[in-house]
Length: 203
Image 1 (spheres, rainbow, N blue to C red):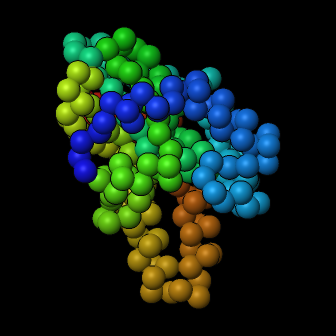
Image 2: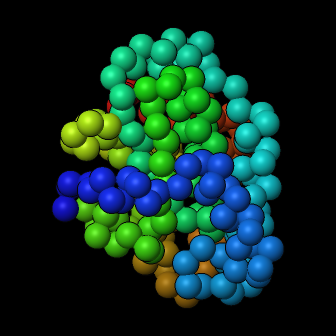
């Protein structure tokens, strides 16, 4: 399924509504999806903090402002996400800042586990990795381009960790914990520049 229905767009969250939903669920002791374990709640808590920080600190590059300003037809940026996803927390606030630069760009968000038919049309190496940005013609809903689930450097780090974990299953938890820390440090050092650049490349 590469076609996105208008019904999916109409039921999607705005960025503000998404943030409110994640916050309200956390206040109720819940994460998005069906897993409300302590681990998922901890991820949600960290991600709320990350998104709050990025909402305040993200600064678009001059190139980003210029090129986004040149988008002259209405498009929908549909993002597949979940509130517990660490990559999504680093990326979605940046997408929101970019979308705010041009009224022709409408940012919408849907939850992965509530939209499996959409997710399964945009797999990464066969996996349901998120976030995924789907750029659509707002009038026809034609898929113009896709980006995600994370910047290239981070994707390489994750794929390397996956190979290590598969070959060392007894140490897989330790390997994944380490890559989570390493990727978050990378995001902090990069200051959203790679996200901006890679999204500009698929505009």
